[in-house]
Length: 328
Image (cartoon, rainbow, N blue to C red; front, side, top):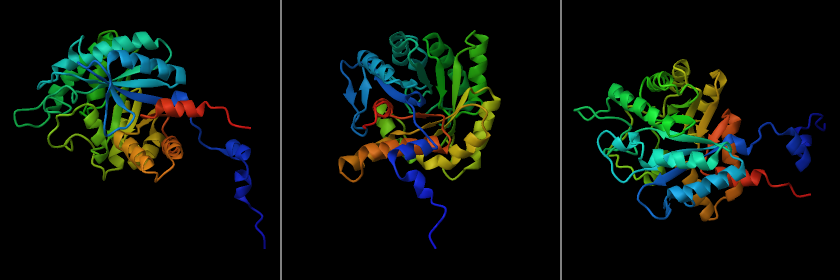
């Protein structure tokens, strides 16, 4: 007997497939991570991330103009300083690379996209950890919160519209929110990197920021074995005033992303991290996969799992593809 129920009917033509599609991508849901390096006269390619560079402030301006033209939602800015010290002094220097670049890019972007800044000490410390170290070499959670409060005020004063709290210190959202509100920055939004796992997929990023880290961050980033803990962290951050929560990395934690999305009453984002980017680029360079289809599918899967927006190094390129008119 021939089947009566035929799901293939809705897959039979491109038009039907478009009409029946459950998940769609749009440029406004994409955020481009960008690196700005101090003390360089030209942009510097990142070897482990083909196509990604450490920008100068001038080249970052041009990149932001291109991003705005592509219609993406925002940029997430990371600074790469020349000088680092134990407490990450450069992070709170108003004229430090991250804060100076923020002012320049806010001026360039206007209202075309959201200029966001990474709020973490790892790029600025000589030991490479995300916080201030205690005498015994462990990260001092509460002393670090004071530095985060200072960073938040400088970044907000520099024009950042959204602060990306990526350090995974307990209480960081409450500390930063209080500091912002007490200083009049009530409209500066907070993105909590809530479920940030101690992942092997951050390797190329550490090349990008020239990380000085020795050891690992397992005492403060989440154990990859723990699913419920990711939801717990997200709910804690929401209770402390986070405007957005995030899961990082994306591809290996789609289950956590779906769980967080199911319980969150604020937007949920995900970060398609450097290792995810590098793997696809390397496989495509060898001709082992179709590059464009792999990029599109990888980002679509993150959106399908529940992300309202995706940080991805392909943001501008993907946005350009999404706005292409279909052939007839």
